[in-house]
Length: 161
Figure 1: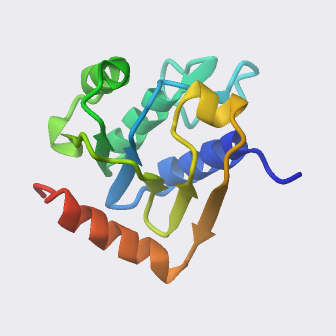
Figure 2 (figure 1 turned 45 degrees about the horizontal axis):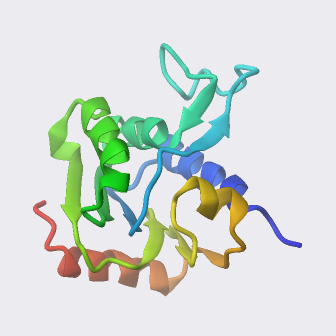
């Protein structure tokens, strides 16, 4: 038995919030606004802003990372399932220059990639992916594959910035 993917996800996103890279890529065919951080005891209030949530959803953390200066790139399928997450994220991110949404009907990859780290594997960023399904994920830090993924994503989805 290894580490739970949701623990790795929340730790990676918190690290990105503390020291955001220039770009953060979320690539997943299916995305749900999953709860990724339990702040019911207020231990992370200082990091989560003036009105910190008790339970922090994926869109909450991504919004904070974008507000800290990162360009957030989300690539997902143009399926109704994903629209709730995308719409919530669009509403949350105040500076639209920090948010790029791409709908790709063929995307099947599942990766979250920051400055020097990457979480990738079979897991979609959904309730089932994080909690119910048996998934295989790899967390890489300071690996050349991370820089290559950043370059590949930018080329595949022709980022605007």
